[in-house]
Image 1: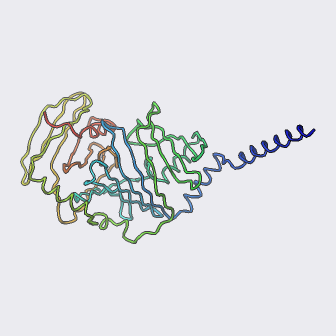
Image 2: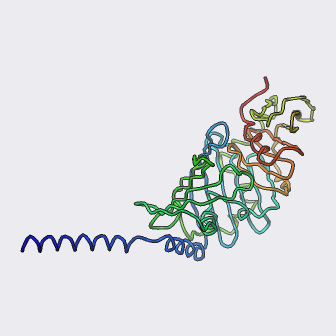
Length: 343
């Protein structure tokens, strides 16, 4: 009898443990409700992340710092780990959306609905909105994370249709995001750290003036290096991907303080690539207005309009123009203009 009683007690205890564990586990609906609650209640956040990208020829790594202030203020600082001197800032305030390169005194103003017009793997509210929009999202609970697999909305890149989002079980903030290609390979990975909800901000934290003129030592050194490089010859870079086109002509135009190189490519789809050394100015310049989208090329941020994509890298301004290339082809060509110099 004692053995039978002991077995029954053990069975009941085991059953209770299972039931308690089941009661403590959140359902997909519970987690989504908590994410929505965070989205509605927070006044802002600050976070840091490391983003790895394998969308181009070589892996690129960015150190990212994100500030968000309710209602619609954003400051996203992206620093290429291999080229820290040309860090860039995506800024959204009451005046619009800007991409700033403080060290080169360059800025673009965008006529865009960023960040709402596309998935953003480093923005908390964008990740939550992707979860909410995808009624077929897969859900899994692991030891430390709630994991959602959702569709993405990258208007400028259809090759990244899915993402896995890992939310911390205690704070419901993002821990890891993996953006997947059609074959389920992770081409972009974002690892978050130091996520702070409802932080304090200074009144001018989201102004263009402060973000363009905050002269930290790194920016001052970068400006000095850029000025020194003005006297150097322009090293012409060629794209390794050309959508089947061949180089037809290389034309050099002498300028007052350097030269401009115009590369003409001809094939099934023709395009022109213009390269010119950037010259910094001690005076804060007016932003160049773009009616288009913000695109991350991996090695830098670009401005993509209907027939043109523009970017700066290593002190050189690039403009790629074509009436025949698709948006995806223009981005792919721009991504490949990194290290292939003139032959």
